[in-house]
Every structure is written in C-alpha cells, then in structure tokens.
Length: 223
Picture 1 (tube, rainbow, N blue to C red):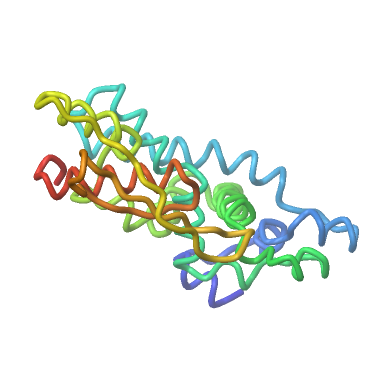
Picture 2: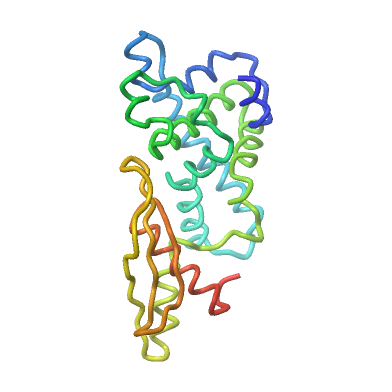
C-alpha cells in the first residue's frame, strides 16, 4: 500500500477508502466487504471534471467541439488502462480466486474501473484539488500539452486530406497479439498501394485510429 501511495503521490488519512477502491466485486461478494463499484461511479465524474478543467486552461485556443473529442480520448478505457499499467495498479487489486485465474489483473475493464475508483477515494479523502493532482500524475504522459492531439478525429482528418487529391484511405488488418482478455490489434492504413502508417490498440477501432494518427504524423499534418 505504501508503494502504491508513493506512485500516486498521495497519503490517505482513511486507508479503508483505498482498500475499497482496490476491491473487485468478486472479492467483495466472497468476503462480504465493500467493493469499488460505487467509488468507480463517483470517480468517473471526478476524472471528467479534472480533465475538463485541465484542457480548458491548457488549450485556450481550442473550440468546444475539439475539446470534447480530446476529453473523450483521455477518459476512455484504453487511456485509463494504460495509466493503470504504468503505475502497476493491477498487482494491488483484491480479486476472487476465479477472477484471478481468468487474468483479472490485466483486464482493461477492471484496470480502468479501479483507476476511476482510486480517483474517487482520493477525492473523498483529500478533496478535489488533491484528486486533480493524482489524476495529473496518473495521466502525466497523456496530459502533456505537447502531445495532446485529437485522436478520435484522426480517421476523418486523414480521409479529408486524401480526398483533396482524389485519394481514399483503406484500413488493413495485420494481426492480433496477447491473451483473449487483453488483445492488441494491429492495422495499417493505405492509399491504394501506398502504405501511409500503422498502429495498434485494444480494439480494432482504436488500432485504426492509431494507424491514421501515424499517417498524419508522417504527412506532417499532426504534431
């Protein structure tokens, strides 16, 4: 628990809040103790407000529509799962024997849910400003102003660029790696016979978006 607190940059006054945030419903049901689902509900709102506030202040020239798309990319399961894995959150989750055997510690849905529950636990224990600090620590790579982009719109942006010259992007499935509960898909995007970029993601759609972003970067259309 101390190691996790070090990674989060926060010390809990009420340690039980953190314990609950780390308790999967399967474990809670087996041992008749509180689990993270209610905290996850609250954490979703804490995260969205924290990210909204950050984007509002860091991107003053960006319009509401694009801010909404960027926020959606930052608060989605894939991003939270990546943040959770970066701080090793999976090793601290309390799971039932069955959930443990099925690879629960690496499931993106569980990791993202627990990440949100931890944000809520910090909010209840230390207030919104401390929760914002933990959100920024957890999502430090994704919230770097130099790396903020509009990934949800990458495919449409690429299509618009290619259509100006009579082209049209096509997405080709390459492969899938990883276990069934945490697959990684690989795609490439082409314009006719020309390969424009490639990418990977936890879903086919995310992999296609990553390939489109890679193509835009190669074309100098995305910083």
